[in-house]
Length: 291
Image 1 (cartoon, rainbow, N blue to C red):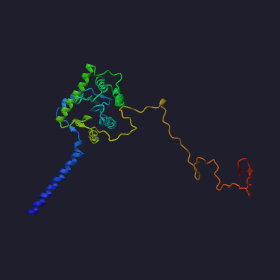
Image 2 (cartoon, helix red, strand yellow):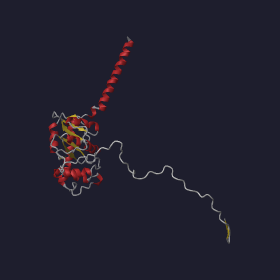
Image 3 (tube, one colour):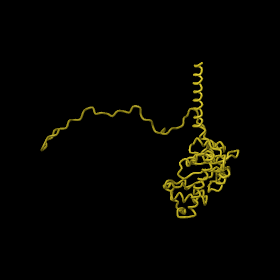
């Protein structure tokens, strides 16, 4: 009887270890990358998104909001690798940029970045955003853009962007999401609002599944929606490959260098004299004699 209880305890312990290991693997490799379905403050979050100074390259489909700052490497990678797939599915990607506030007395944004963020919120100029993201951060001077630090109205716009992020992340924490950037929000096919702190590429597949976006797109297909192939001038049809006659049997295509005569198999050796030349005669000079 005692042996039975010992083996039962060991079996229960092994079962607990297996269950614990399975839950750890499920959480580590799958669950922690899933997006969060927003269960609280949905109306307040949607109002924030609608009133924010977002910018978009067009599309007209289901909106996808990407919140981040200029120097975020994860956001730049997501925009480079995933945004074309979302656009191919018909989604309208809307970017919301903000300038990070000072932290412990240290600035986390530059004057050029704050000026550009204020200009984007005020004008929603997509071409400005493209020029900004295509220029290295150290090289961007915000030339031609009014400064935000010495302008009360534009400084208020920068502060409004920071307050937007503070309010948004506070609402998302109530649904169990720890904000990291890029912060992506969208609605699935059933209309539920979802959010993802997509710093890890393993989270991206859930957004593609909800929006029906492809995992890969053809590099030759235009990414922007509504683009049509440019017609040839005067309606000229594309040229086809010429029809070449077949090579007759027993003949081979000429190779380079066939016109040149082949080298001789055994070239003749140079002739040598039959008798050696006579030795030079000794000549006496003033200092020595050479032979």
